[in-house]
Amino acid sequence: MTKTILTVAVTGNQTTLAQHPRLPCTPEEIAEACISSEKAGAAIAHIHVRYPDGAPSMELEHYSEVVDRIRDAGSQILINLTTGPGGRFTPSKDDPKVAAPGSTLTHPMRRVEHIVALKPDICTLDLNTMWSGNSAVINPPESLKVMAEAMREAGSKPELEVFDSGDIHLAHALLEQGVLDAPPLFQIVTGIRYGFSCTTQTMAYARSLLPDRAQWAAFGVGRMMYPMLAQAFILGGHVRIGLEDGVKLDRDTLAPSNAALVEKAKRIVNDLGGELASPKEARTILGLGG
Image (cartoon, rainbow, N blue to C red; front, side, top):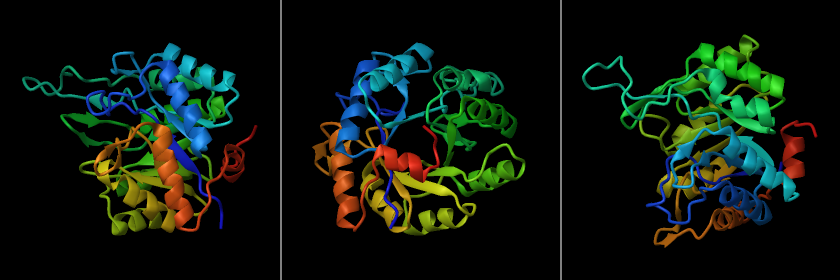
């Protein structure tokens, strides 16, 4: 049995300080969450950045400080930087073609500025165009091509985040066009409204659509975080956990840290007969250099 790679998603951009008062927000807090999660069993850190007040950030200086702190500490955890921010459009009620407050839609090269500068091991490439809250997340294929080329030049492996079946069909097209390199790495997202639901049938269906030789992981959000982690492992995938996806250690207990979530995820994988990969082993499994 191939070892299972566990990704820790330490903060995201949707979880709030009201939901978890110890949510990592400063670069120091985010880096420490990644380092302590590695010690608990995580092989990959999926990183968003924040302003100190918890607001989502796209600032290069924030990403740079987080990455420098992780590397300076001697951590071997694989660094996976998000490129999701910058794709959201909120239509104005009076004139829907005009962006309302909350819109972040920007040029695709702005969304990968930190990838070009920092050259992480992995970076996300969201393939979804879908409704999200009161906004539309928009990822045009032409923008994806620009971002994918920048990732290729930086030497960073795209992690293809897919939220519905159409996203996987788009991935097939981008692979056929040579925009993406094979074998690809997928992250199947379940539990986002209007996307893949958190069910066994849905995850099995999503897995069945993946290209041959694809590496893949999956996760669920909120209370379905643990059931879908187990489901991903059972179906042969890698797994993800973290305060980006859910804030509870169990039904009644707020998770004290990302590391505590990783420790529970490790127990689940071990109890099901699996074993977590180290960062070095994860690098080999994913075919990453260095």
